[in-house]
Image (cartoon, rainbow, N blue to C red; front, side):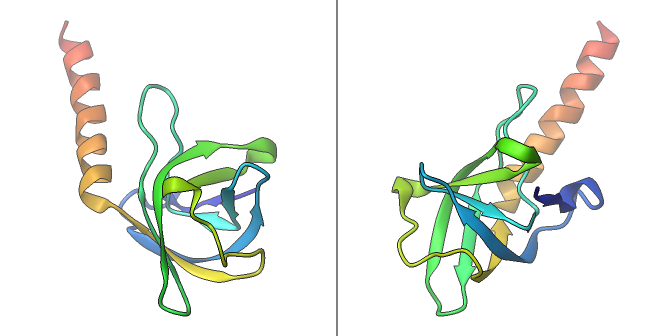
Length: 114
């Protein structure tokens, strides 16, 4: 299970997290996350995982996995050198997230006015 930090603070832009698993398909499961998963018509978040050694992994999106886990999908499946137990900083593409939040709210307002 991934603790969904965005449920407590939708404006949190980054967090430190521990890699819980790398899935057979190359997805990354963290113990906690600021990344919102694709669902309900809203796209999942994208961003970056910064590793302690200075490398980074680009995240294309986030999806819902088994057992209430959030699975981050890396660009080009590039998860080499990343393993369970590693500590990372999960950083959102904040401009994209904020645009999705504004669009989501705007669509609710539009639907209410029709």
